[in-house]
Image (tube, rainbow, N blue to C red):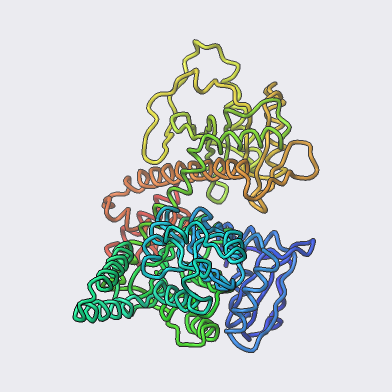
Amino acid sequence: MARSAPTVAYKPKPGEIPTNPGVYRFRDADGRVLYVGKAKNLRARLSNYFAPLRTLHERTRRMVTTAASVEWTVVASDVDSLQLEYMWIKEFDPPFNVRYRDDKSYPFMAITLGDEAPRVIVTRNRRIPGAKYFGPYPKVWAVHDTIDLMIKVFPIRTCSDSSYKKAMASGRPCFPGQIGRCGGPCSMKVTIEEHRAVVEDFVAFMAGGDQRFRKELTARMKEASAAMDYEAAALYRDRLQAIDAVLNKSALVLAADTDADLFGIAEDELAATVQHFVIRGGRVRGVRATTIEKELDITGGDLVDQVLQRTYGNADGADIPRQVLVPAMPEDADDLEQWLRDRRGKSVTIQVAQRGRKAELMKTATLNAQQALMLHKTRRTSDYVARTQALTDLQEALDLAEAPLRIECFDVSHLGGTNVVASMVVFEDGLPRKDQYRSFKVEETTDDTDSLYQVLRRRLAYLDRPDDDDVPPPADATADGEVVTERRRARFAYRPQLLVVDGGKPQVEAAARALRDAGHEEIALCGIAKRLEEVWLPGEEYPVILPRTSESLYLLQRLRDEAHRFAITHQRRRRRGDIQSVLAEVPGLGDARIKALLRHFGSVAALKEATPEQIEELPGVGPKLAASIHAHLSAR
């Protein structure tokens, strides 16, 4: 029996972790909280983190190995664990919990209910005392258009506080009041009490009570017409048209009594985007966009859990809807419903939109989230200002003589120490140059640092070759499916301003030795470690810590991730090609059975270690063929 891979030294002893619901915290050696999580059963959840390290997802393994201790707090109920987890995440801001970057570009409509005479304004400030907010809206002009239409129906104050105070003191209406665009008390047409009643109607309409006002205005218009008061009837008609104009800006997408929040989510390994549709009275009253940075690999349900906690953690009860529509059901949906119910004071349900108009609207929200995710990823790469800032910041952080306009990043990949390959990816001016990517095969090596040293010596040798040397084409350099069919001597000989290696201090020292032995110590070097994204320089005892949200760190992460992806892709292509060509030599074994074998055993290594009896378990493979396969693989 193979010995299981080790786990971390601080793993609690069997039986120490309780089976109660609770909240846990991972801390590093300095006591900093790295991650906060909740669980219905603490022992069951924490055992997932203390499995053999080789079985953990890469980023989960990074968190567990960075931590030096784990602690937990038992609570009375699962709902209590929700609240405690939210409080601790807000308090400690752990680096491995998801990070939120709300889109600050969207404006809101606010009604300042805390004022003596409330007014309606356009603002991005969400902290006005006593204010009621609607939106956000996609554009500032859209809010102004809505307000212009609304004050025709509900004439409330729009002037500034200074204008209002001056008008009330002087007895002369403010300028908007003089031209009929402000119906506040300063216009001398209504009292403060009458104005507040109109404000309450304004708020009720915006909150979804449009049908009541349409019925009331329609009835008044008919009454005025029957009484031959055509001037009043025309006024009510104009107000109805204004209401219709407002409603037409927010199309009816669901039943008129629908009061819901709908969340569309798109994600990749590192980030997620959320489109939050606020639906009141069956109409989309606002849309909020959020970008989330993920440090750990979490499921769709866990991500929804975190989104709902973040959205409603500080929300007023009136802002929590009757229904929450999500793309995936959280594991603790019942507890979340109870938590929301306690905050709202009324029933709240969480549902997955599966059919009908709700499913169609979910598709729309998800499509918007996918486009927002793509925009988030491309905006930082295509924005010239952001790229320039990244290169300038790198120059300052690494103390370089010039901005690194050409950066090459190297990564080594292997399968249990065999089939070692390495990748070189190239970024120029902060953008990938896939036509200049290269891959290397390492025939004999002792470890990753030796592999890295060999690869760098081979790459650096090209810098010293005459321009007219012939250079053979690459063995199998691919990137996203395209095949590099030509290698130009001049491109491969371009001198980089910065070399980046995937790894920490040992990898950086191996790369520095390669630069020294090749006589190219003028080329700058750094490594980015998969722990807390530390940047290591040769000869330094401590790493450089770049700001988490900096463009320079984002550029290094993209380089590292792209080099890793390219190395893995190349290794898999070689491994698949190698084993398929070997198996094709076995008599009676065709392409279909080869694919079935690899799919059944999951990896080349597992197939090579399988016994004839285990191979025979595959449908369509008899004892004789299984013995031939085993013998053929054992002979190699």
